[in-house]
Length: 381
Image: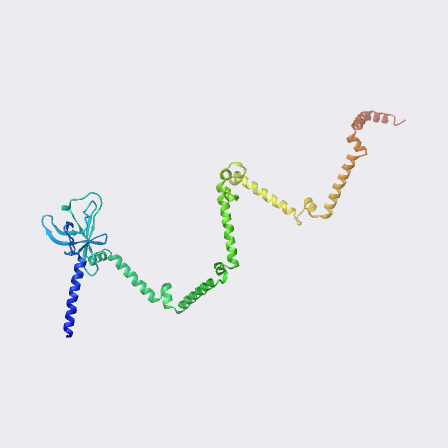
């Protein structure tokens, strides 16, 4: 048994295996119950007899024959469908490329609704895979060209050291800094994993910081529950209708006040807009400031002395105490003033005495000219 004989046997067996595999893959008509359809195409895009027919991705038939129909002006493909799925409304037949290496198949969508006339079936073709890719490249030629130019500029910038990435590629100092940053990040991550630092302790279940943080979250949750239930001031604002009305009333009052201030209504509005009145208030403020400066220790005047002179304050206090003591003695008695104030009879007598004294004084005043005349007359004697 020579080497050539062994190679020939292997070659023949390979052909037999490929033939059997081809028959198995392409399928064999299953009988008279198969559905036979004829579909017209304006372009079959290389579809050949024996190509499969697929429904929802599954092989469900094959192409038996393709011929030209001069009456319809179409290329007609005769199909054998192994399942009884006649075309209905919204059906479609579309020729698709099987792979980038060649080949094609027919995709069949039976559709839904009412049955359609099997004599007027029409399909479409998507063209070859390379043709579609070529069409796509032709349609996007300008965009692809612009992208390639931008890529070329980017590579030039990187090569010349421009930008952050270019600097990292060409600048040793920048690369060292970047490596240090990465090492620092690695140290931070390691600290976090080992529970070091504040963030690391927060990630550790047994740390005091984690327990405090959990308590803080619990308190926040309680506050949010209070807020949702309408407790507290913030909760009342969002839950209590009466409090909301009070807030709205306050807002309206503030708006009314600001509107009044914007106009000339009221003293504040006039002060803001009336220059004469504004100047008057400014003068008053200046005078008040001057008066307050006079009340300081460096100022002058009796009020300043009363505020800062201890001796004067003591004398004033003593005088007030003396007046208080006198008024208390008059109120409690005894004494003439006490009797005059509290005894109506004595008061009446004193009043009559004063009246009599006044009348006597008037009489003396009227008699004074007569007395003076007689004094002059009898002076020589």
